[in-house]
Image (tube, rainbow, N blue to C red; front, side, top):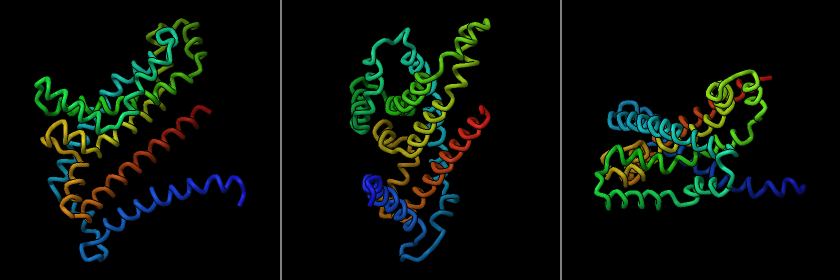
Length: 256
C-alpha cells in the first residue's frame, strides 16, 4: 500500500459507512413495502398525496423567500467584509461567521425563547426570521470568498474607461461574483426545504415543511413512505447540484 492510498483509506471508510450505506438504506426502504417486497407505490404515493404536495409547495415558497432575503442581506454584508476600505479587521468576519459554530438547534431554541419573552406571536414572520438567522452565514461566506479573491484590475479598468461606481458594481463586480451567489443559493435553498426543527419551534407546527412530513412518517413507523419522501428530496438536491455544476462549467468555458 502506497503512502497516498494509506492516507485515503480513512476517508474511504468514512464515505462508505456515513454516506453510501445510509443512502442505500434509504433507497432500500423506499422501494419496499411493509413485507419487504419490491414496490414503487411509496414513490408514486407522493404524487397523489395532497397533504405532502401542499407541504412541498409551502416548503418551496419558504425556501425561495428565505433565499431571496439571504441574498438581499448577505450580498451587501459580503461586499463590505471583502472591501478593505470599510473592513480592516478580521474580527468582523469572525463575528459574521460565528453563528455557524453554534449548534443550529440551540440557536433555534434561543430564538423561540426570545420571541416568547417579547410576546411576539409565532408564525410565518418568525419562521422566516429563524431561517435567515440560521442560514445567512452560508450565503455570506461563499460570496465573500469570491469577492475577496476577485481580480480588482477589472473594476479599475472599468473606472479608467469612465464607468461610475454604480455601473462598475452592476456590470463588473456582480457578474464576476455570480459563482459565489450560486453556491450560496444552493447552501441556503436546499436545507431550508428539508428542515423541520426551525418550523417546529418557531411556528409551533402551524407551518409544516417537507422535512416535518418525513419526520412524522418516521415517528409513525411508516418507514417506507418516509424513506420514499427522503429519496425524492435527495433526487431534487442531486439534480440541483448537477445543474449548478453544469452551469458553472458552461460559464467557465465561455470565458476561455
